[in-house]
Length: 177
Image 1 (cartoon, rainbow, N blue to C red):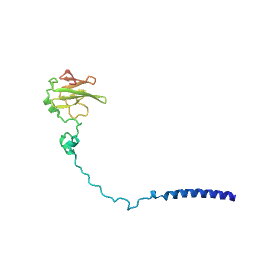
Image 2 (cartoon, rainbow, N blue to C red):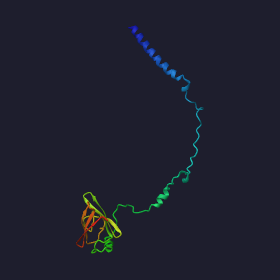
Image 3 (cartoon, rainbow, N blue to C red):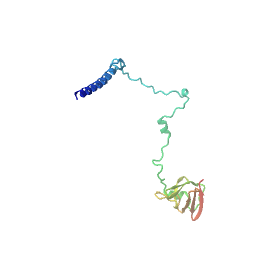
Image 4 (tube, helix red, strand yellow):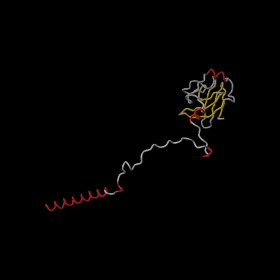
């Protein structure tokens, strides 16, 4: 039993000595030395970078406008471009004769389906907006009707892009111009 303990402890000792010698041999080389503080170059702040633009003639490119130039060239409009237009119905009635037929100033610009509801995009005189099937083309949620009193939207044909109107009980069919 004593002989087996001695050989086991000798094998562990030899294994341990090999690992220690291997680790120490790596530390003894001159190439693995960490650089000293004197060997490091002194820290110098980088020189200021010039932000001058190369001339457009030298690069052949057209310079882009500045942020201020872009912002000043854009006209300011409505705060919410998707809000319904605020047109009083009396103003619309005075602009368009309710007994007159849809003249050249009434144009169908497009038709859309919003959920299960059909809408037509129309322009009338200087006013434009959406109309739905019903009296004066009033859509649910609209503040004011776009069409004058006496005008009724009978149907909107999504496939053909047409709108059927009744003006003083006379039916007219208008399509996208």
